[in-house]
Image 1 (cartoon, rainbow, N blue to C red):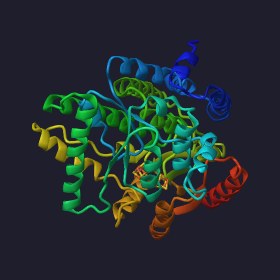
Image 2: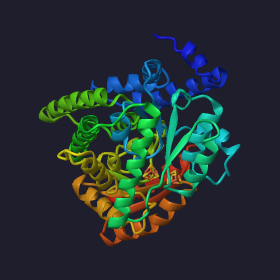
Image 3: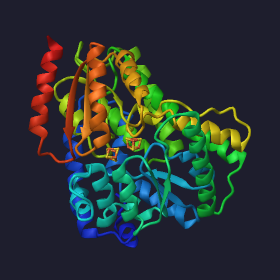
Length: 424
Ligand code: SF4
Ligand code: SF4
C-alpha cells in the first residue's frame, strides 16, 4: 500500500482533519457498494480509484505538475475540457459531494446555500482535498447565483477564471458562448505557456468524445430489460469520469462494457426479474453522494438512468469531429455545450423533452425529481418538470435533500410510498 502522507504534507493539507475524512469514506463505500451482489469484475478498477481517491490520481497530477503541466480544477459540465487538454493542461472536476466539508463552507457562506457549493468551498478552506490543493487555477462559470458569489471567495485562495455562460439559447447566445470559449482558449494558453493548434484541439475533441462514447455505451446497458450492472455502479463510474485520466477511463470503461456484453449474452442481470425501474432527474450527485441511489436500490428497484450532470447530461451529444479549422472547432464546441439543459437557462423546455424521452428509452416506471436543498433553480423548475410528467402519464416523486444522513429514514419512507404506487 502506497503511503501518500508525504504528498499531502507537501500540499500543505491539514493532515489531522484529513485523517478524520479518510476514516469516513471506506465505511460509507463499504455499506453502499461492497454489499452489492453479483458486481461485474470490471468494477474493481473503479473501487480502487474511489478508495484511493486522495492518492492515486492526485499523485499523477503532482507528477505531471513537476514536469510543468498545469492543472485546471472545474466545477461544471459547461467548462470545455477539450480546451484545457488541447493547451497541454489537465482538467479535473472538483465538485464537493461530502457532508464532511459543509460546516467549513458555512463559515463563509449563508447556511441556505446548496450543499454542493458549501462542500466545494469547505474542501478548499479545510485543506482536506488534494485536488483543490493541487489545482493551479479554478475555472468557474456564471450558472447559478450561489456559484457566482462563491468564486469571489474561492479566488482569495487560488485564482478563479470565470466563464460567462449565457442563460438563453438563441443564435446570439451560442455565438456569445463561442466567444467565451475563444477567450478561455487564450487564458489556457497563457496559463500553460503552450499554443493550441488545430492538431491539438482536434486530438482533445476526440479524447473527450471517446470518453462520452464509452459512457454512452455503458448507459445503453441500463436500457435493457435485465440490466447487467446496477445504477449505483453506473453513478460511481460517472463520478469518477470527472477526475480520472480520460484515456485510461475510456479504456477501462470499454473493457467493463465488453464484460457487460458477455453478461447480456449469458443472461446475467443484477436485479430481480420485473424489478421496477426509476429514472432520476435533478441536481448533480457529486462523489461520495450515493444516498438516493442506495435508498432506491435497497428496495430491490433498478435505477436505470440519471438526467443530471453526473449522468446523461455529462456525455449526451458529441462535438463534431469533422472541423478542420480552429474557428470551426470552437463553434462546434459552443454548439455541443449549449445543448446541455441546465435549469439556469430560460426557457429550458428541451430538458423536459429530454426527461420524457429518457423515460421511454430507459423504460422507467417512474421518475424521482431529486434536488439539493436551497437550489432555487432546480426547485422552481421542479414544478414544470413534475407537471409535464404527470400530463404525460408518468408517475413522479419530488424530493429535496442535502448531504447529511439526517433525512435518510424520512426519504426512505417517501420512496417506499412512491414504489407502492408503482406496484398497483
Ligand atoms: S446543474 Fe447546472 S450549474 Fe450544476 S454542474 Fe450542471 S450545468 Fe453546471
Ligand atoms: S445544485 Fe443548484 S444551487 Fe447548487 S451549484 Fe448546482 S445549480 Fe447551483
